[in-house]
Image (cartoon, rainbow, N blue to C red):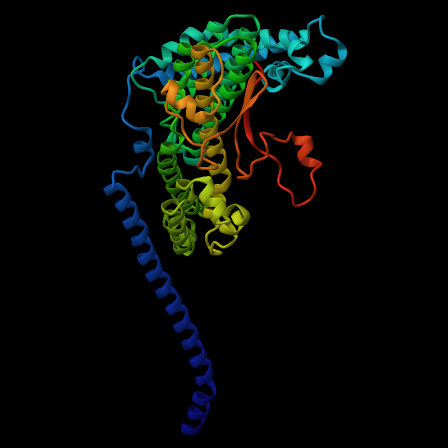
Length: 483
C-alpha cells in the first residue's frame, strides 16, 4: 500500500510543478503589472503637478480662465457677429445664384463665395477683376460684413476678449467661432478690394483694419487651430491690401495705422499659449480613455460583479500602457519643434522626415500618434503668416515713402533711413525681404518655405502638378506694385 502511494505521488508531481510555475509566472506578471501601474501613474501625476507648480493649465477649468462679464468680453460679440455673417451669406448667396442676370454657365460652375473671392485672388490686371459677375458676387457676399462693421469695431474696443467654449469636452470641444472668424475676415478683405475698386479708400482701409482686429481677437486662443487661423487672417489682409493698393492710393497716415495693427500680430508668442492648451486637451483625452475603459459593464445585475468585471478589470490591464503613452505625449509637448522656426526645422531636415516622428514612437503610444499634430506643417504655416505680416509692414512703408517723397526708394536701407519705420527681416531667410524696382513700381518678396529665391514667383496648383518629380514648387511670397 505504501508503494502505491509513492508511485502516485511521483506521477502527479510534474503536473504540480508546472502548475506552480504557471501560477508563479502569472503572479510575477500581475506583480510587475501592478508595480508598473504604481510607478508610471506616479510619474504622470508628478508631471502634471510639475506643470501646475509652473502655473501652467492642466484642467479644462483652467483653460477656460476666470469668468469675464459679457459686457466686457469682446469674444461674445465677435461670436455673434460671425454667426450672423455666415447665416446671412447663405441666404444672400442663394439669391445671387438664382439671379436672372447670371448666365447658365456661371450659375452652374461657380458659387457666390468663389466668384467673389476672385476679387482678391486674381491678378490686378486680369479681365476677371472687371467681370460684372465677379463684382456683383462681391457686392452680394459682403453685404453682412458691411452692415456689421460697426459691431466688429465695437467688439474690438471691449477691454477683454475670450471666446466661450465647453473645454471640458476635450478634443470634441466645438469651436464654431474659428471658421466664423476665417469667413468674416475673408469677406472683409473682399470688401476692402471692392471699396478700393469703387474709389472709397477710406472704407477699404477700415475693412482691412477690421481683419486685423479679428486676427487679434484670437491671440489668446489655446489651440493650434486658433494660431493657424490667425495666420490665415493675415493672409487675407495681404490679399485685400495688395488689390486695394492697385486700385487706389493709401496715404502715409492710413499706411501707418495698418502698419501698427500688423505690428501686434506676434504669432511666435502665441505658440506657448497654443501648446499649453494642446497639453490640457491631451490630458483630457487620456482621462477620457480611462473613463471609457471603466464604463464597460457586464450588466449582470450584480453591482459588485459589474464593478469588478466591467470597470476594474478592463481598465487595469490598459492602465500602464496609457500612463506610458501619456508620458510620451508630455515629452513631445515639452520638446516640441513648434517653438522652433522653419529655418531651424529645414536645417535639421525634420520636414523631410516628419512622418518618422510618429513612426518612431513606441508601439504603445497609440493615442499620442493620434493626437500629436504635424509639427512641420504647423510651423511652416505659422512662419508664412509671420512673413506675410512683416512683408505687409514693408509694403506699407514703401507706400508711405512714396506718399511722402513722391517715389519709391532705391533700397530698403534708404527706406529705413528716410522714413524711420522699423522693418523686420524675412523669417525664412533671416535677411531683408528682396526688393527690386520694376518700372514705375516694385517687386517685394520673401523667399518662402523652400528657402530658395524663386524670383518672386509662387506656383499655382496646376503648375505644381505639372512639375517634374522631385522638384520643389516655387513658393515665394510676393507683393507687386505697378504704379
